[in-house]
Image (cartoon, rainbow over all chains, first blue to last red; front, side, top):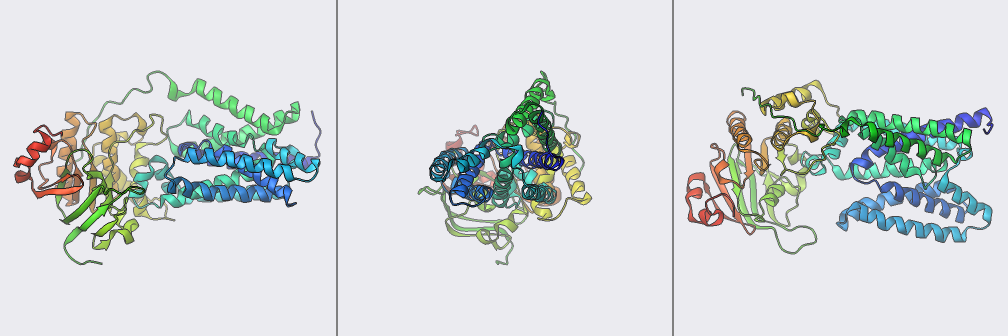
Length: 284
Length: 250
């Protein structure tokens, strides 16, 4: 077991907890919008950004945030204007970002800097800064406020985008905001979880919560909760076993998901039985 | 802004889908007065759904002038939609979808409540009333994905009614319903029209289920209105017999 100074331990746990909250909260929308692969895209865009940051000698996190935002801004309009499925656009942008990342890595001066860039791919407990914690706290507050104020709009869009639009909801604005916030969550979690594994933190906790509840509100509560637990337990696993933090978090969240599939009440036999119509029309 | 008794007024409307050249509907001239109940019939691909979605602005018309509530559709579509309830053609729903029926019905009020405003008790009262109206109040806490086709259709109708719309657009509301459910929905539409005087525009495939209170029929074919008149005369006409072969389907 590794021994840590207390301040670093607290900062790391807090960072893991906030990253778990932010990523798995956004996961609720990403999974429902069938944008599961957006996690891959955002993490690799952020990685390309980090490599770019190192290449021009600025904080790689700034590069990661800029590239994630730019990707979020391109993805929505590109999918709509080109009339392509989001997953096709994601596939295209994903390979493009990896290509950019390799080019930038090639131009990073010195091996130490390249190692810094690669560390962003798999995450590190020691990388968490107070600045990261501040930004993740800010993002968590923004997410809570966003969901509280716009819950009815988000629920409406998650059920059916066309119906939501027909009721007068500006669906495009909310769709882009979800992409934008996902980019933010991924960028800020990169240093902790790592670019290769951050998408698992978006998908796994939400997919676990989906196995138990039919109520969207409960999924919005339990997905971040599972994300937080995955991160804290993953952190503990990393400390006692010396596994990389990102891998530990993903293993824990994957175990939660596998267990949820096994015991999910939604998947029990007979649960798919249709309810018989019980017609009771009130007098007009 | 127009100021006359027509709740909907379409002048030489043409709608082309993005990236295509051929109009789905064209030369559409249509005026609908407040409180009318009309059905749109026609073969598959005639442009019936496109016409509905041009009225509520989900599809932008490419030619002509369209007004709803005297307001230009293209300029005021967000405002117009808040007063139009829309029941879309049955769509596939994941049986594990994480939504309860009451929340889906409430989602119909989203635009009406407005951005930055939270749901109040009054909004929930409207939801319970609408669910009661369609006989689905007992289903409030059921998962939406577990409903039968007929139950789902009624929830979508309750969703549209919870919006307290001035116009109700229904796209094939009887599809996927068994005969008993069709009769119930038909009776329900007659009652809603009688009691609330909502303007109802309904796309329908099966001529035998045109509600009794529907007094006007529009026939669409190849994107054009080929007939527009009262129900009796339209249903008796030879054109209809030819199009539908007398069994409600082309």
